[in-house]
Length: 255
Ligand code: ADP
Ligand code: MG
Ligand code: MG
Image (cartoon, rainbow, N blue to C red; front, side, top):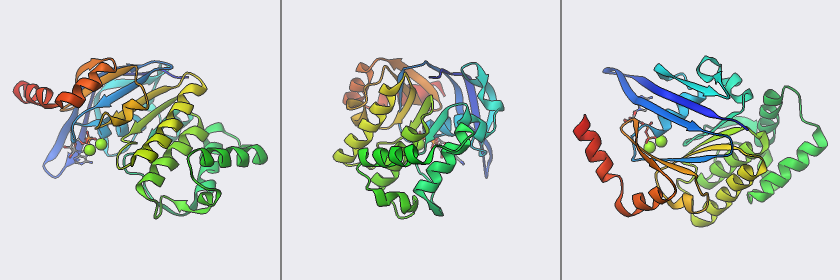
């Protein structure tokens, strides 16, 4: 249960040729229980938005605000953001060699809740969650993301989300590289999560395919570091038919 408010967010990254502005004034509110899709071409800044909200040190917030239930997210450490109920599933999850999935999940759960989960119910919950995602029990013994297939990485992210149970989840291209069966499994996980109790979800995607399984309440078109258009689910259908061309051209013209 969370409401995320982003107001006129500007974000730069350091490059070899100096600072480059990537987000150029993003304003967006995701209320309790709403699912918003952000769709846009490659390089438009979608991942930058996700990382900025999550607190990745590479991204420099030059102006604007982000609040979660009225609390200043940008003033929080990464850990505080997680404890406040923010979850980010990354486009390119990192490997954590030597740390098993089950240890990782338990450590994260303990850090977020401030106390260790009760062992017996927790193990059951983990096994059920993995099974729902078609991951067998031995998956828990594997090193996080080491040698995982694309589909396993994404299903592991969804397992984390379901078990950590944040109020607000940001899913960055959780659909990329999934075949149709894996896409369905991942989507079912997101839908279980959404149904559990009025979760806020920000679903970042390049393709409309996942939106057939996870119905968004709102769709935002993201081009050149800004929201260029917004609407309901029908906007995704229009993008499927016509692509991002008209938005990209308008952004180029506007400079
Ligand atoms: P998207 O997720 O929409 O594909 P990104 O947020 O990954 O877009 O990237 C937006 C733009 O910012 C791209 O031009 C990318 O090259 C640039 N960019 C993102 N992160 C960095 C970084 N850490 N260093 C340099 N450039 C970056
Ligand atoms: Mg990209
Ligand atoms: Mg991206």
